[in-house]
Length: 321
Image (tube, rainbow, N blue to C red; front, top):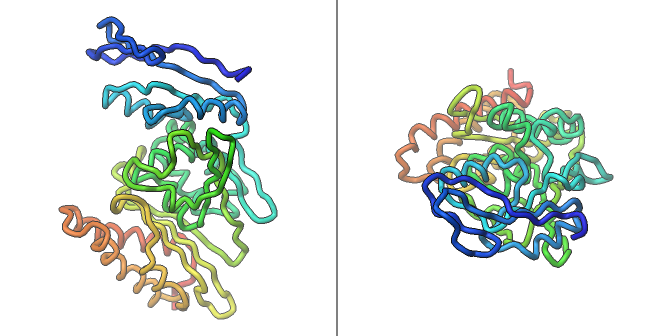
């Protein structure tokens, strides 16, 4: 790795024993823990860095989740791979068939990008309400997937948009996997420790497609989703009918998921108040199936109704009939 730097860093963890992550030797009781830091500057160097990673290693992109985890859980990875110098991991572009978003692209950039707003408006809407403004300025979409929090705002839109992740491994091989198959549960993905998402691929949608994202959060300025919903529909404008519908749900269960029951309610239905009301009325059952017996179920059943109503209204469909 010609340009990558392998150096020792120090992370303070008050009251914890210090361990040299590079050698495994115990250090003093000063509250300093040693770790290794790699800073690859290209995908080629990142591939080599992947070969050094273990199950206890972590990537550093925005660091919004990693730093909090290290502080709250009082632990230090044996190796951190800093992705900040890899330009290939950032940026948004359109090909003939896809919208492509680098995994290290920040939510601020996604929310404001005209390509995302045109081709994946539900993702742009979700990116605009991730955490605080400061969080959006540094948090990345790849990190949101890798963290696999059930309340990750980008996950429901990515599922509804049928996004795929480009995965790179330590052997230099790449493949595409649906985001739905990357999520394994709270804080868990199906990625091996020597794999990383380098890019998100979203199939381009035509002008007959409409999408939006709505959520109920815990606060106003720094809102963590308590229920999030992405709705993507394809309209037959002449027939005033929803031809195809996709609904992604977040913060309602172990991980984000597609709500097939809600999709069935919308698909083939006319664009009118009756369809809107049927869509909203079907939501509590989705909550019941997702979190049966949970103490928060009654609250979530009402919350998802309100979120579904907001999502319908945000789509801008004419439901005055």
